[in-house]
Amino acid sequence: MSRPFLNASARHPIALPNGERHLQTVHLNRAIDHPNIEIGDYTYYSDFEPVEDYAARIAPYIYPGSPERLVIGKFVQIAHGVRFITASANHPMRGISTYPFAVFNPDTMGAYVDEVAEHGDTVVGNDVWLGYGATVLPGVTIGDGAIIGAKAVVSRDVPPFAVVAGNPAEVRRMRFDAATVEALLEVAWWDWEIGRIEEARTAIEGGDLAALRAT
Image 1 (spheres, rainbow, N blue to C red):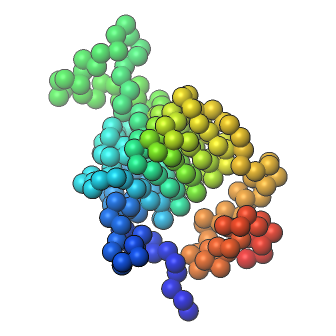
Image 2 (image 1 turned 120 degrees about the horizontal axis):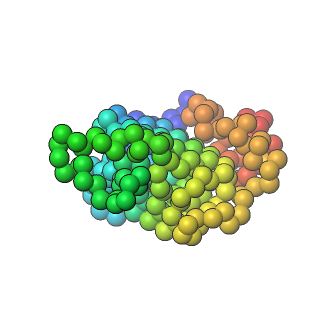
Image 3 (image 1 turned 90 degrees about the vertical axis):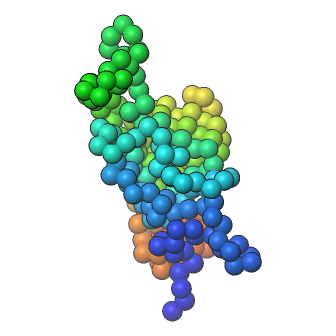
């Protein structure tokens, strides 16, 4: 049996023609160990420079024990400069001032936790492409198969297989018609075993839904 073309256990999944690993591309779940961040297999991030702390690079405001989570599905592609601005980045907005007085006193740092928690988790579905420099704001859910344009600021939920761009990001088009989207969500190829995905690669890359269903 041939080896799978993808290796979920590899920290750096791309091998260059000379055999060296591309060290700026990383499987995130092999590089991040954080109690508030969950990342599926084969999801990768590419940067232009070496990164010491990938959690801090992509989600600088989330911390162990924070009231929110960042959940990213499988086969997500994350470009350089993408940032998830999770709920703990927010300032208090219930009063007159947004100045976070409480965070400067260790005894009161947790004063805004309940307000932060109202924003909820940030969730990215499977097979999502987040383009260069995109920013995802707190509590957003991005559906499976969506494309987030370069420098987009995503402040609201994104439907599955939508293409969004701009600030604030808006749906510019759908990748497929409604019936095809429903069928793709039902097939959910990203949940298959890697050997089956390898067999279906031609159908996936060629957009052949009938062949994909028959795999």
